[in-house]
Image (tube, rainbow, N blue to C red; front, side, top):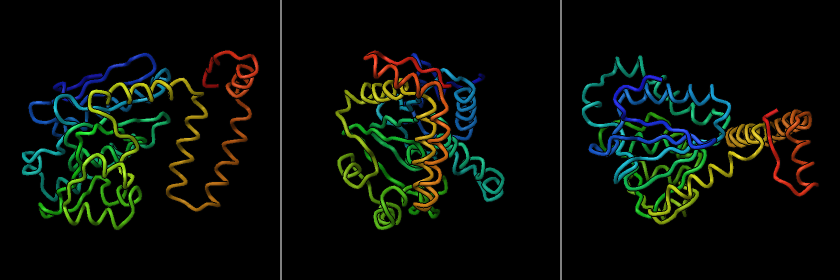
Length: 261
């Protein structure tokens, strides 16, 4: 895997992939080359069946302040016409991975970085974190999932307040309105995220895959569609070796050994 300038780091800790935004001198700002490297990391995760969970964090004082202004200045309508679909797909790919993806957020999480964490499965925030989507103030609107995913997560009223009012949301308010799932002291952030990822990585892979797909589907479809999906995945799971192993391990009072089969 050829990573261009180490703006993003990838390491594997047991069955957990730890991904670090690694440009702290510039507050982990995003650029198109970083997105290309992120796409390579996503492909590596998809091709490695031993990776069962992912954690994304930022190096230094902040998670990320989003796309840097120099990148925005060098971008025009024709570029976005060619590239925006791909940019959105990089963020969406985290949502579509068969394993859980957890954000460990501290300090600033702004613009495209906030849109990134909206596409992840679980958001754990340090108590010093804050969130903002400033695009409207620059004369544009969020275009990497902000208006779509934020609205689904916190509702249209809160989304309008945050996006159209250009309001900054601190950690405790983010927890209250459902923007994040967990808030912890900053010193405990990475430990909390890695512990949850490790716990999830020890679950049966087939069950985790179907659960993630089912929840994503339920957020975007009718109750009838969701229930039909539950029927299909349940029938599939009852044919797996992992289910039988889980039942045997529970009966025998031992730790199960899951194989993803």
